[in-house]
Amino acid sequence: MEIGSRENYQADIRLSLPLFTGGKITNAIRQQREYLMAAGYGVEVSRLQVAYSCRRTYLTLMLTDHLLEAEDASLKRINIIWKNVVNLYANGMADSLDILDVALAIEQAQRQQENKCNERENTAANLSRITGLTPLKSGRLLVAVDSLPTPVRPSSRFELAAASETNRPELKLYAHRIRAADRQAALAAADHFPDLLGYVAYHGGKPNRNLFSSSFNDFFSVGATLSWDLNLGLKNIKESRAARFRASSLSRQRNDIAESLRLQHEIAVNNLEHAYDSYLSVESEYLLSQRKFHLAEKKQQAGRMTINRLLEIEAELATREALYQAAKVHYYLAITNYLYAIGSDKIYGGL
Image 1 (cartoon, helix red, strand yellow):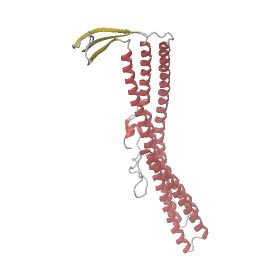
Image 2 (cartoon, one colour):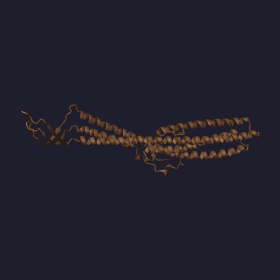
Image 3 (cartoon, one colour):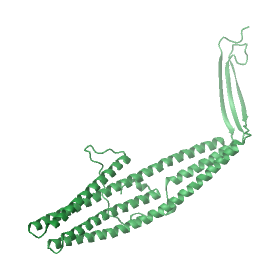
Image 4 (spheres, one colour):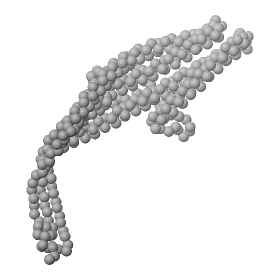
C-alpha cells in the first residue's frame, strides 16, 4: 500500500506572546536604553574635552602671537636707540662702550624674537593636529584671526553659576550607568520566575492527519507553554548581588566626581576673579612703564641719561608689555576653565 502522496506539503505557522516573564523583557529593554543614553553622554564628554583643549590651544597661539609682537616692538625700540647712539658717536657724544652695549641688546632681542617664533610655530602645529586642519598651501602655519576684547569684570560679563548647577556630561553618564546596573540586578532577579508563553498555531499540508490519504487538510491549535529554569548553583542570586554592588560602586564614583567638579568650579571662579584683578594691575604697570620709557628716551637724547640706563628701562618696558599681553590671554584662559568646569555650551562659541 502506498502511504499518502508521492509529494509532501507542510506549512506550520505559530504566533507566540509572552504572558509573564517576571520582568525579563521590560528590564532588558530599559537596560539597553540606559546603555544607549550613557554612550551618548560619553560622546558629549569627549566633545567637551576636545572643545576645551582646542580653545586653550587657540588662546595659547594668540598668546604667542602677542608675545612675538611685544618682542618685535622691543627690537624696534632698540634699533631706534642704536641709530641715536650711532649719531651721538659720530658727534663725539658717545663712546665705543655705548655702541657695544646697544649691539649686545640687539643680539639679545633678536634671540628672544627667534625663540618666540619657534614657540609660535610649535603651538600652531599642535592646534593644527587637534583641529585636523592642514597648514596653508603657502607653507605658513595656522593664523589666529580673532582679537581679544578688553577684559571686563566676570560678574558683568555673565552670571556665575552655583556649584550645584554644574552641567557636566560625566554626571549624566554615571547616572545612566547606575540605572543600567540596577536594571541588570532586576534582570537577574527575574530569572527566579517562570516564563509563561501563550501561542496560536496553524498547521496545514498533505498528507497531514491521515498518512494514508493524499488530500490536503489543516487545523488550528491554541495553548500555553510554561518553562522554569531552576539553578541549583544560585547563579541568579549571585549575578543580582554583583549587579547591585556594581551600582553601589558607580554611585560612589559619581559622588566623588561630583565633589571633584564642585571643587573645580570653586577654583575656576576664584581664578577667574583673580585673573581679572591681575589684568588691571598689570595694565596699570604697563602704562606707567610706557610713560617712563618715553620720558627716559627724551632725557637720554638731552644727554642727561646714560645708554645703559635707557636700555634697562627699555628691557623693563618689554617685560611689562609681555606680561600685559599674557595677563589678557590668561583672563580668557580662566574663562575657558570656568566654562569647562560647569559644562557650559558657551565653550563651543567664540571669545
